[in-house]
Length: 341
Image 1: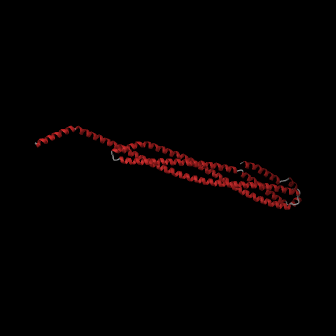
Image 2: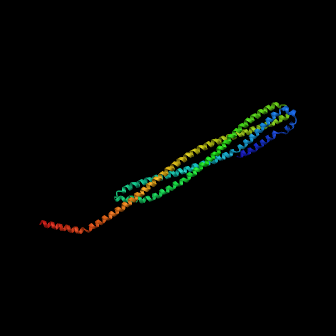
Image 3: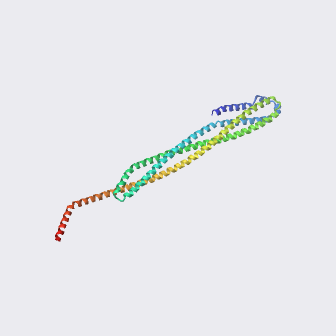
């Protein structure tokens, strides 16, 4: 950036020297002498001066365009940093999504086991207490599911941040593309400068053949030749800046490829989130079914308890009748013995 700032004053001073040379004092003296001006060809000198003026204007435009190269480089560095941050965010989000998938898979297995236990509990055998115990153990699992759901909801805000970062990256790339358009315009200006330089050299050669023998004009031509050599050196510097612009274009293409890869990863992440939402809905429906089965099991257990109480009452009544039954047995045995006798 400092090199560009240092080159700009030299280009401005060079352009100022060119503007001074367009109207030298000696040419002012020659304007009143029609005979001497006709000897050197006033029309050719005017044409040549106009071409030099156009060359100076083109050089000033090229200098102003060259000063924008550090800005393009800064924009590229900023965009690279943002893309690196996007990659880190995607990596963290992918890790969190994998953890959530593992938790949901484990929960699905446990719910399936609970369903099997509930099916076994529908027979109302003495093992119905086991599904009830599993049902009590399901409460911490339900709380853990709610925590997983909160984690999934927390993943939505990083996804929105990633989307905003992608939009900002697109804006930065748009700015870089505009800068590249300016660089292409700068390339066309450099070509025009080259053609103007060649035309100026040809015109100088033609003027040299016409102005041989005239010492004053020869000195002026030599001065112009030196200035043109300086302009040629400036053109070489501009060519180097064009090479830098091509390098910037290559970096922009690479950034565009990285952005497309980031978009693809974002689409994959969005698909995973949609699948996670579907699995969560399925788990919610499974929990609702499990709650219904639990209520049914509780009602069945209550009915079984009532029947057991009734059986206990019957057993107690039978136990109270045992002495009478024993007495009847004794009487029956005595009656049988007497009938035999």
